[in-house]
Image 1 (cartoon, one colour):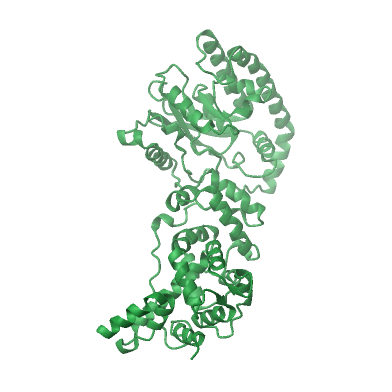
Image 2: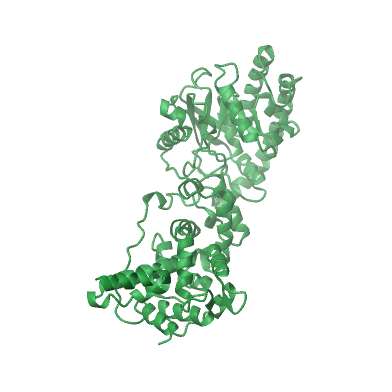
Amino acid sequence: MSRCAEAAAVAATVPGSGVGEAGLRPSMVPRQASFFPPPVPNPFVQHTQIGAARRVQIFLLGIILLPIRALLVGLIILLAWPFAAISTVCCPEKLTHPVTGWRRKITQTALKFLGHAMFFSMGFIVAVKGKIASALEAPVFVVAPHSTFFDGIACVVAGLPSMVSRSENAQVPLIGRLLRAVQPVLVSRVDPDSRKNTINEIIKRATSEGKWPQILVFPEGTCTNRSCLITFKPGAFIPGVPVQPVLLRYPNKLVSIVFYHGKNFNIQLCVLTFCQPFTKVEVEFMPVQVPSDEEKNDPVLFANRVRNLMAEALGIPVTDHTYEDCRLMISAGQLTLPMEAGLVEFTKISRKLKLDWDGVRKHLDEYASIASSSKGGRIGIEEFAEYLKLPVSDVLRQLFALFDRNHDGSIDFREYVIGLAVLCNPANTEEIIQVAFKLFDVDEDGYITEEEFSTILQASLGVPDLDVSGLFKEIAQGDSISYEEFQRFALKHPEYAKIFTTYLDLQTCHVFSLPTEVQTTPSIASNKVSPEKHEESTSAKKDD
């Protein structure tokens, strides 16, 4: 019997190979509850359905209300600009000390009044609940959920505290001067030290014992559709000072002021809102939350507790989505996938699986290359087999089932990322790659020929007529595969490592399910996998 035939005979004893009865299956990887899908699949998009009667009403009211409200808003901004100019004259764009004295008192009073007038002219009816804390009681306001730029009404109601904003916004004509009047914390996207400087500035102001205005922060860091509270960024909680949670509610029949990642949406949002008779808003100031000693040392713990309290008061769930999910969602759309395909709960995935955004974005490209041809942007068993250039077999179904965490017969992007990190990458070690190479290198000459490659795969997958020439040519640069080529391909495609370890698990389970006198046969495979241990195994048998 030739070496290839001998190896094939051993591989053919594996359950699922089509030879003999199936033995015991290795147990599935347990599903961690922390990796279950989120209660809200997509918190970043709101689809508003407007009926024919409502469209007619919006059109008729818009003819009258839209020009009047746009004119009033423009007029109020022009009236507010001189007061903002007085407040910021001779002051640098990035303040080093607070504006105090008469300039602060006069301009704050005038701008607060004009702010209320502007939102009233736009049709907003505001109901305020709870007591607003002083700067000494709570230096920081945390406002959620954040769904639109109209959420700035919380800033007016709270008495014009400072806000965290992009430095580019301070350069916008008229609006930039109004923004500077509230003494904002400006963030630069081009400065690599901006994040550190912003945190230091927030700490300085929050611990100034009332010398600086209070700071208002939207801790979610992006807009959502208000169906849940996504991850709170820790910036507002790093100073370790008391914070006052502020809830925003929009109890309207027509949800028009919700954020959507679409083209020209800000214009559509303004038009729909201005064309409504009125828009109700509820701003609720919850009791001040004081951090414990543990929470002062762990701002993420503090942020999570405050988020849970706010979600409970709102009656909505929490998820681990974050702004990076929004970026992935947009990237998925650009890759012709459904936008929802990019949502993975980035905070949870990155923390538990030690992945950064660039790594997840790279996986999205790989996923798109597999799923772009399928319906719904999900990977079925056929697409999975085609991507791996392997037929559908028991071993492949076993691997597919490990990826398919909810057992719905398909793999979404979230399951794909978790599968690579939990199943494939840990299996793709140098030791496993060496063992796999030795198994394929039947004649132990340091190279894998196409015959050796084909023989092992055909037998282990249970497909005698399997054509592996395409896969072989993808790995080999010549007529045979060297270890370096094998290693390079394995590191680039970790899915094959899990196929190999699954095959070994199946073989082991089958061996231990056989009668004792038959279990010596697969020892040939062990010697072929690790030839250097053959002599040691033989001597051990003689001693027995």
